View 1 (spheres, rainbow, N blue to C red):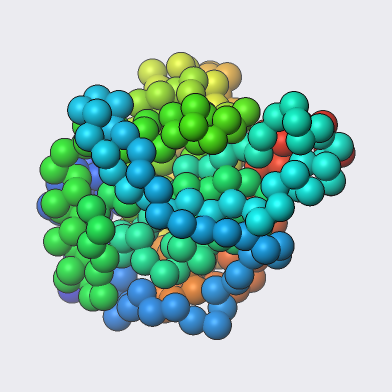
View 2: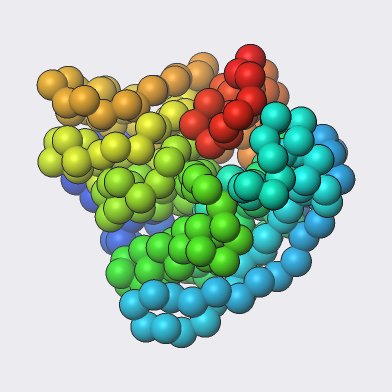
Length: 299
């Protein structure tokens, strides 16, 4: 498909939800953006800065009371993390982060990223929106995304369940949501679904269409959003539209653009940009420290 034809099709779909949407054309556009990519882990994937422990956990969909599974990573010595922040370990617990995978599914890359987030001093819970399936090819990822987005209510129920698990079962005093690509779009949708529930949100190159003016006016969650200026899945025009909708609202949404393409933070993709990924990570960790931790000095 030529770039001109692709741009035309993308423009025609701006009212859809793109990276994290509920139409088959959204997954097709995603396939275009990931042509030639594989989800294989590479040496660029970073392990956590401190020892962490990880395991599969079961929590419940609050709407149906059915169990679902996720991948939980936590610091091996959470008390030492709290003490380093000047917080009494007996008085509180670590904050939590709901992690939402890319369109490949909950694979080794996402598990590595989840452990890396835990290494920053959080309980990080990666949801599995593909029901224990992962993709090795764009065609398979497209199929899984189409299946998952047929039931948006179920996706949101899973994310709500993960939030409540961290908050109620893990006693996290504050909970953020963070996702990439498909997960970035779901992050925006989760904010529209529960505009006051999360304490911070970090969507990476997800379609911001769910953040209507109405949703932005109701939003109390601080948001740090990362986008690529060369992105052919989530176009700069969509980001322009988000910033336009932000005008006249009190929504705390920081938008950062990078001279990079879609999935620039994914170390397994052809669009991986180490400089943009590093800058985005530094901004993300500083943002999370600001909004999730208490009793510690900020950098």
